Length: 168
Image (tube, rainbow, N blue to C red; front, side):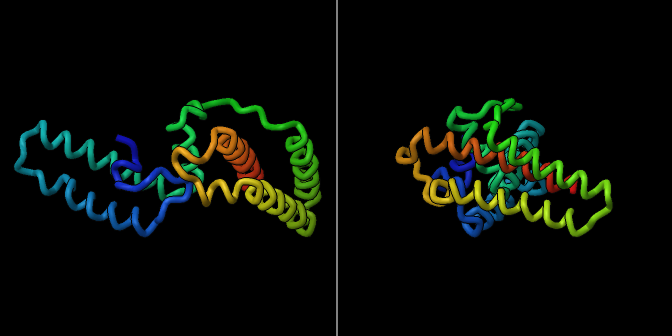
């Protein structure tokens, strides 16, 4: 059973958080280990495993980046710990921004740090706009593998940019 089946929703890159939250609370109550304190050890272990699965599913679907990763893995388009080759034009652009950011940090120039950080955010917006429609309108059996590969590219580019922002 995958996370979408667990929450009884269609596979989506942007699932309804209200629906997920509601189903999560229902499942959490239904499989809360405290309600099985008088059950057999085997049943208690199963409930504990189910409860952990529910929590992991909720945590994943509650985070857009993790949801994208999960759907790509479900579709066989993303391997665990995959080393993805980012496009060279993207890397060159990011390298220039990162170099500016490092120079600004070395100089202690907060204005330049702010400017470089804003450039990273603008680039994030640009790469998001390229896949926004795919993310918002994903439909099982309709969205093509080519479109999902665009989402994969976005996923890795965003992760790269997020690391830069985290270090700024």
